[in-house]
Image (cartoon, rainbow, N blue to C red):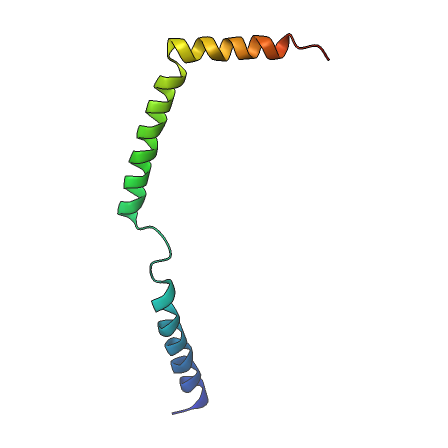
Amino acid sequence: MNAKGEAVRTGFRRRLRGRGASGDAGMSTAEYAVGTIATCGFAAVLYKVVTSGAVSAQMQQLIERALSAQF
C-alpha cells in the first residue's frame, strides 16, 4: 500500500475513535421537537400568568413607582 492510502486509513481510524466520545453531543430531531413543545407550553403558561389581573396590576404599580422616582 502506498503512503497516501495509509494516510487515508489512519485518518479514518482517528475519526472513528473520536466519534465514540462525542456521538451523543447534540440533540436529535425528536429531542428538538420535544424541547420546542415544552418551551411553547411554558411560554403559554407564563403569558397567562403575566397577563392575569393580579400580576398586571402589580406590574403597572411597579412601573408607575419607577417612573415617579426622584432623581
